[in-house]
Image (cartoon, rainbow, N blue to C red):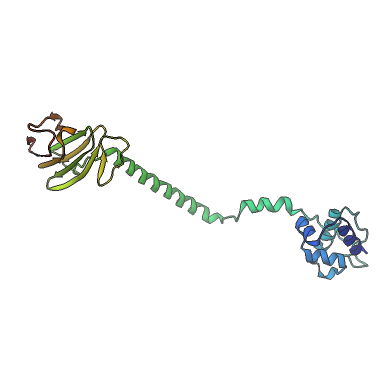
Length: 237
């Protein structure tokens, strides 16, 4: 019987049903049914002869002359070749589930919108970094423009039109990170106001001041803490 021949060939090759099933992709229960001759447990149609032929080819046995899947008195129908899934299934698994055609334009639009939004956010952030600490008011151009160029770390408070615009440490290092307490100033930090600009500097000797394009050097001790008030383009120590 074919079943006994299949089982003997498998055992001679030292293979288990599970190993044959893994390599041929034929369920182990169907392989067991073939070896036992219980053909009624196999799937109907061409799979029955296809499984038998594939199992025999795997074991290196010659083709079985009388197909057990064909009842007597009927003309045998040639079963279509069972494609080895070892080549086809991995390729289909790599493709993944295919999206319906109606969803593809929607997903492309969502992806494009997300890309545009990210680009706008990046442009705004880059623009803010390029603008630096300048605090010009929107609309009317400021009347007071003061640029501070520190030569070393120095604590500064700037009040523009009654509002504190900066209070912290100015650092001439280009590597200093801008935050609420420190600010990198290379080549300089720029502050603006319309009517009144007040600057308190812990050590005036560590800072060069340029007011409305004109460099200033206040009188008096430069190494002490000083407070400068600018009103209507005039400077008062």
